[in-house]
Amino acid sequence: MTFKELKISEPVLRALAEKGYTKPTPIQEQGIPVVLNNKDLLGCAQTGTGKTAVFAIPIIQHLAQQTNFGKKREIKALVLTPTRELAIQISDSFKDYSKHTSVAHGLVFGGVNQQPQTVMLKKGVDVLIATPGRLLDLINQGFIKLNAITHFVLDEADHMLDMGFIHDINRILPLLPKEKQTMFFSATMPASIAALAKSLLRNPVRISIEPKKPVIDTIDQYVYYIDQEGKKDLLLHLVKQAKSKSILVFSRTKHGSDRIARILCKAGIGSDSIHSNKSQAARQRALADFKSGKIRVMIATDIASRGIDIQELPMVINYDLPNVPEIYVHRIGRTGRAGHAGTALSLCAKNEMGLLKDIQKTIGFTIPVVR
Ligand code: AMP
View 1 (tube, rainbow, N blue to C red):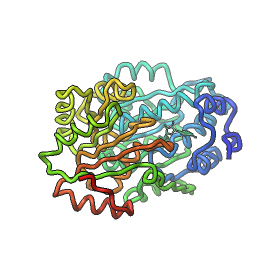
View 2 (tube, helix red, strand yellow; view 1 turned 90 degrees about the vertical axis):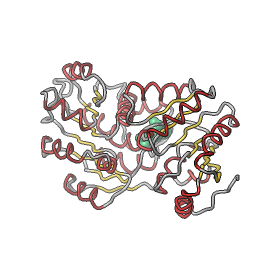
View 3 (cartoon, rainbow, N blue to C red; view 1 turned 45 degrees about the vertical axis):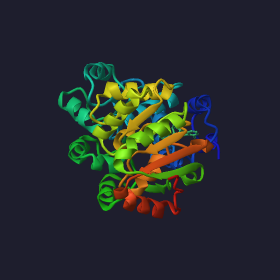
View 4 (cartoon, rainbow, N blue to C red; view 1 turned 120 degrees about the vertical axis):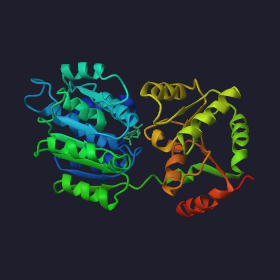
């Protein structure tokens, strides 16, 4: 299947070719025709599957084809997403795919000065990507109107609920016109999410993409048994041993991630932490420094790590084991992408043995023990 066969318009095809994308991912093959056909979509898929293009490309195409397009800049498509990092990533995708069209998009999220955002809104955009809290603030101040929305995307619905955004969402939904196309994405579908989806979608087409399997096949996984107090020194040793490799370290707590970053910095290893207590500017800077190689080690909590999209990350270290096995799979999936070799090391203290057992049951194999 090619992008052309999916009936993607010429300007977008050109943009995809310039990105170096040669063919659609499975969710794009299934989802793009559905959305191009004006159908509501229920997508069960996580970040990393290429799901952004499933809504971004048809939205760009639909808007560019509207007969009165360009006459009046008003928000016609709204993408709601739980984290700032994800919002930025989605905005980057719109920027890439719409570069040969005149569709304008904008981005609003909290934790930063709102003034540049209101300037952008006054100029006008066709597509708005937003996190719920800031969106509501700006609506209440009269900077945003949602009455012209024809396309609505609710992204990562499960994380929206986990992060306590349900009240914000319930305030936003009634402001949207009844007549619109809705695309709903969630990696998991517990009853509460299914109910929310049902209330929002009209005769949706459901597509489901399993988390990528090769994750497990292309990643060398090892575990170290170590008491909690010994983890610092072991981490230092492992980081030094990895020479120049970029490493993403996962910590269960914000406080822990700061502490680990300090220890590594003290030892002369360029590192920084990323978590939700940090300002948006600090997070973006840390991420940019990590991507450019200016710092070698990034320590992240699970929520902050969502949306970190780094090609060719060679190593992931679990300083703490996650308490949900699926998170382990998600964490180590950051390495070993696109056929590159990856290594995932886990430091397991005595009280984490139960977690390790659950993880091994989920991945269906016993992780080799180094020591
Ligand atoms: P997403 O799940 O939308 O966050 O996409 C995950 C990553 O895959 C992003 O870095 C995209 O830029 C990239 N991507 C999306 N579609 C394709 C494609 N068809 N071929 C190659 N890379 C892609």
